[in-house]
Amino acid sequence: MITKHPGTGGFVDVGTVTAQLLYETGGARYAGPDVTARLDTVRLTQDGPDRVRIDGVRGEAPPPDLKVGRTRLGGFRNEVVFVLTGLGIEAKAALVREQMAEAFAKSAPQEVRWDLVRTDRADADTQETASALLRLVVRDPDQAVVGRALSGAAVELALASYPGFHVLAPPGKGAPYGVFEAAYVPQGEVEHVAVLADGRRVPVPAPAATLALDDVPQPAPPAPPPPGPVRRAPLGEVAGARSGDKGGDANVGVWVRSEAAWRWLAHTLTVDRFRELVPESAGLRVTRHVLPGLRALNFVVEGLLGAGVASQHRFDPQAKALGEWLRSRHLDIPEDLL
Image (cartoon, rainbow, N blue to C red; front, side):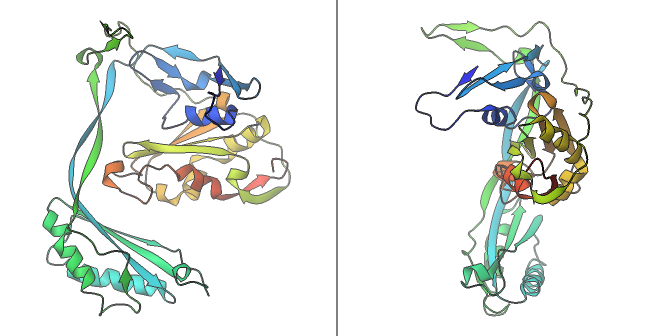
């Protein structure tokens, strides 16, 4: 049973708990050092205001290895954001990219990434809403390559590039960035100690029985929903979502509240449909995990976050808002669910 803690505010319901269960998870097996929880056995029911009953949960022996995080220096990173205003946004962006490529010809960074963010609107009533952002990120093991070489090239374009040239801020000298990697070590190699309230330290031996974390067979899908009229609407009108990072991978958990909505979601939000709604996942491995007891699907997108949050690979480096983006995408949704 989960009950709202006094003073925390907010209403605790099945959706709130489902969001917590799907936060930064992978498949149906959720491993810890002492036990592996089977998320596909969890059942949630509303048991009154701010009370959610959790039952049916099964556990298994923990895995033979423990997952540990390792962070190392990946190199040096720098960025500059060009502001493109008014007409000819695509042409202006192409000109800057061509000019910067020429500037990098003598000493090109190991990694160069461009992102054009179309925040501009036609006939805008403010200059800011008439502008798009062109973001350049460079990485290299040598700080000099991403430092003065980048800042000099970008600033020197000021009087010889597109009309209205300016940047959000001049680039600096380049900053170090980290790379997060996951590794595995045998259970017995890590000291496990319980510290009690009186200060006593009690060693906890490694588990005698372990079980490898193999994928759980996908459950049979529910019966498909009956045909009927549909309306184009955001996925978030009928579904909740929670997303986060797992090193360089991202996960998005999506759930619904009714059995009718679950029948629609399970048959509609396939891996192919997910790729359509989240084009950034194109070319990456996407795995769908089905959790019928939670009326939920969990998607893991491998490599979406590059080398992890410290590398700042994308606009939202921890994928915290990836689920909200997915909820904003439009689908044909049965009218009776809306």
